[in-house]
Length: 77
Image 1 (tube, rainbow, N blue to C red):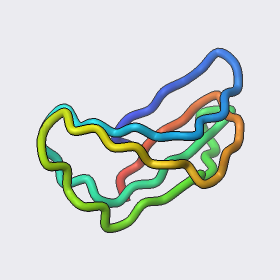
Image 2 (image 1 turned 120 degrees about the vertical axis):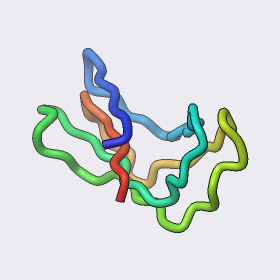
Image 3 (image 1 turned 60 degrees about the vertical axis):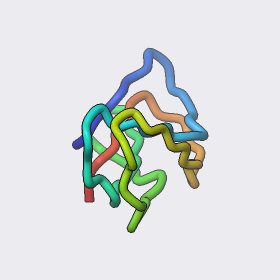
Image 4 (image 1 turned 90 degrees about the horizontal axis):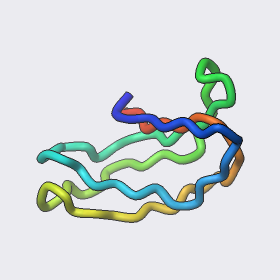
């Protein structure tokens, strides 16, 4: 897992914003949601994303499946 976030109530996310804090080769990942932090559902996958040009560069990625969950995570593939 690269990073994760939890909410008090179930929440629907529409846009995933990535901005690396250091140079990274992250170019494939799965964005997942869960209500129990045990069973995860894939909401979107990205493949062959061009590398980030610099630390702190921001990119927006629309999440394909818009469903409500309490926990979200970004998992490296």
